Image (cartoon, one colour):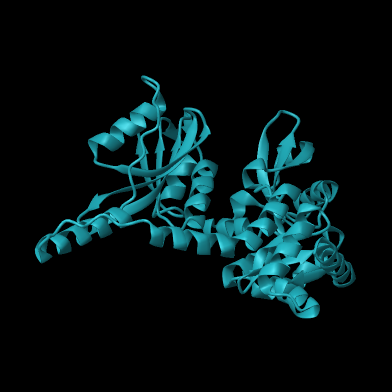
Length: 348
């Protein structure tokens, strides 16, 4: 059996090397496998770094490709959403674009086309940095050349800092490391598939063998009421309360939540007492509302801070509330009345 699986894996790897980029269904059809087994085989190739898997999907399937032939992914760009396709074509044409020149919807769309758009920072000698987006195939040296050329032609605003770029680095905030399946995980997956059926059958037999205690009698009204309460418990998420340091920014935020009957459904710390985000819900005249709440403990909040939070909220398909301890820059205030009209800002 192990030899058969190795043979299938070798054949799948060979197909990928020949074609460069394939879907799960391509492997399944060619090797006469179920889509589940084909997916497991391809996942194993990703774990072995023979292949990589795309963020882009064709239907429900990602594209598996040989890293050296990533350009073949471009033939699948037609499967992107309309806005994503639009920004992909723009980036393909311009090679490098300045984040501050983009509309919020364009930033969100670029953050979604992870296979083709790479967020970068141009860092100057004085340590200041600015965010750009580059096409995946453009090198950092080419980025410098393109930016300087665009300045000469006047296609981007002349900026002394852009002529003084010392290095380009990938924006860590935009990177989502690919989770790889370890060899042990693969073996565990295979073992689980083999054992799942007999184990389930045994569990069912055991359940039948255990005598059930007699159920207390209820009248129909009580039963209906209990069912409704049970349904409510299932649909309502439990509020979360993290450990809070006294007089911290985080404590102030949660005290504000408490005073206003805001329930926190999920909570994520980016940097302790400096930046965190959560999903929160609260009652409105129109019923319960759910928001993405981005909290930043910073003395001055600029347009980029709002933009980053806005992209996060859009990717979660939720409206944004931005909570901060700092003051908003003039440009930030202007953008809130034009680009980010839907964003609610609270200074505490």
